[in-house]
Length: 151
Image (cartoon, rainbow, N blue to C red; front, side, top):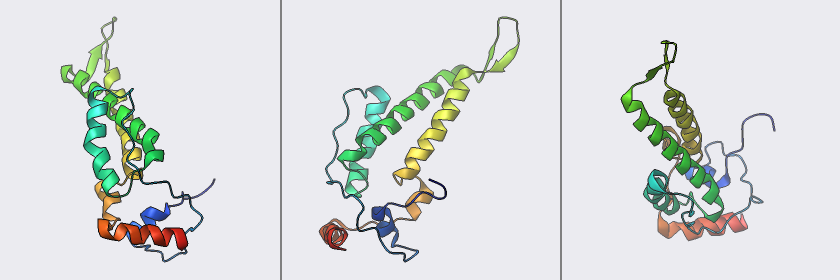
């Protein structure tokens, strides 16, 4: 697909549908059920899951189908944390021939940050992406869900 990726209807509604374009009434509407933390997440990844999943779910930005995407974000977060720990010893290393070079951990940390940013933008977890949202109070969520179902 060429061009700008489409904005999910839920995010359009949270943004107030700024372009006033027709909403996609045929978009899948997964059941808003908080996903369980995958067993393979541990350490920093599991901590990040526990830290962020509840809030994303309460905002209506997380459902069971998003489990893998959030797990990938959490694993990337853990990778970044590990790389940052390793960088405490320095951002350069010396080769066997005596040359000073960039630490491999710096490249890992930078790449993890790039991937984290992509995931964070998708979930509305950056200041810029969050500023485009307007959260629907829990009492109005059922009205919103009814509108999405019936158009």
